[in-house]
Length: 234
Image (cartoon, rainbow, N blue to C red; front, side, top):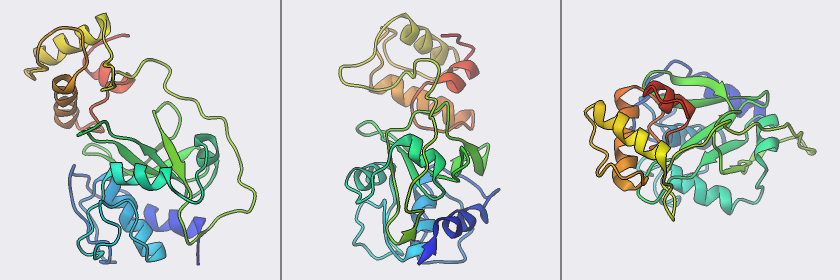
């Protein structure tokens, strides 16, 4: 059985490799060097460490074809035998952190290093890299089956994003800041739909397009980094 540190070490061996949104990785190709997207990276590392297909649309599919998706990681994290808090995941090497996608949208997946940082396929600009757990929105966290973790899990204090994260919710977020976001996207030549101050599917798509254009994490959520890149102060 692989240890949590083995799992993290395997992931870190791929630092610096390329990120492309929607890239596919055959989970049973041990020599794969990318390109990656976040869910494919986490699923590939998991299969290589455990032989399990996790975080895929169909976990029973052949590992050479199984398609990883952040929404599938959210599904698996929600039903995992060992669901953990974000604070526990922050302090536990090899825990998986998940940001759920909105319906039809894109989330994010990262592997904790246990020291407050992650190893993840982050974005086109940063590729596979180490990032901070704090200051980002996470919904779920889990321990991976067939990975040996400490019997008593450590816990760290998790600091969520300091400001509001504009994203697709039901009912939708609305207000002056959303309208400012829509106007800024329009000024970038990206159509967010009607400038009405309502964060709907068109605005989410425009945010994601801007993030891809700017080589940010393309999750369609406008947090501090995306807003700052657009010149917006919440």
